Amino acid sequence: MNTLNKLGWSDFFETSLTPDEKQSMTIGRISTVNKTNYIVIHENGIKACELAGNLMFGLDENEKPKTGDWVLFVDYGDLGIISKVLPRYNCLSRQKSGKEIAEQIIAANIDYAVIVQCLEIGLNLRRLERTLVQLQNCNIDPIVLINKTDLLISDEQQKTMSFMIDAYQAIPISAYHGNNMKLLKDQILTGKSYVFIGASGVGKSSIINSLQEGNDIKTGEISQATMKGAHTTTSRELYILKRGGVVIDTPGTREFGLTASSSEPESSAFHGIGDLAKNCKFHNCTHTNEIGCKILMAVKTGGISEDEYESFMRLNREMEHYESSLQDRKQKGKKLSKIIKNMKKSGYKNSSTP
Image (cartoon, rainbow, N blue to C red):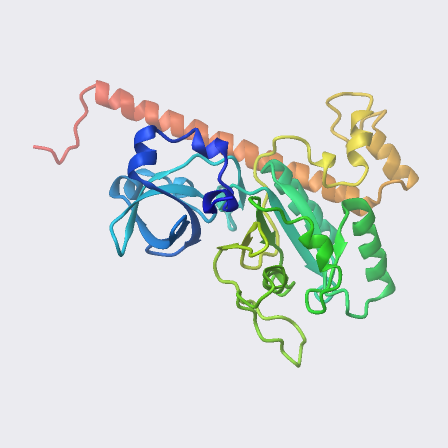
């Protein structure tokens, strides 16, 4: 298998190239996005690249290369110039933090997202549900890890961990001691791309080091006072594992703001709710007050906890709000374009023009 195939190259990307592009340009994958350049891995090594002027000024922010993107560049020796960003088959994104309703792309062309939680910081089912919903929106398969299982845990943590293992096939591991790491290694396939996501200190970089079978990725020193890992990853970085597979390490994130959904979230993130929703009396059931709602009935009888139901409804509302806000912004943009177009037709000129 050649380097491009190990990096995740497939027929999907191959069909987007013209014969001339194959002949005159170099294919590479974005490893790291810096403020002024991009680090690109290609068949013959690594190249620092910059965007061609038409891309730098002609692309929107989310259209510019992100970690995991495939690009074409022209090699000028010490520097490469990126002339094309290839189409993505998917991307991991979230809603931007703050008041702005917009999507932030974290990484592109991802097969699996490895969600890491740990016993030291604490397991959080609500955060896991939110992440799983967003992965479903992004068309990315999840792998759930529970790290630092070598630590002593309470009965409540044990109960939560058992639920995560049963409901989401979570893999309990200890990257530090190597416990159950083979279960994870068996899921890492050559040519597939895996992005690691989770809060700061859960051990993402340590897990990747273990997969790499060498300390090639920086990890923070453990504070003897708090026994918590320091936040070490400050950018999104792509690595090729020696044993096969491509991994992307990301900075710690507390949660994912949801973007527009492609389907209802109950089908993957909420244990059992998906099957119940299919059997509601009304096909457009809102699961709030309808007679014959199977979800409400399950909440009443204790089959679904109040916390899980509230989380399910809250995430639905959040996605609906994002979708409606996005549509409203598009409508405003269309109205503005129409006004400008009409002004041009009417012969309007800027008053400062002589």
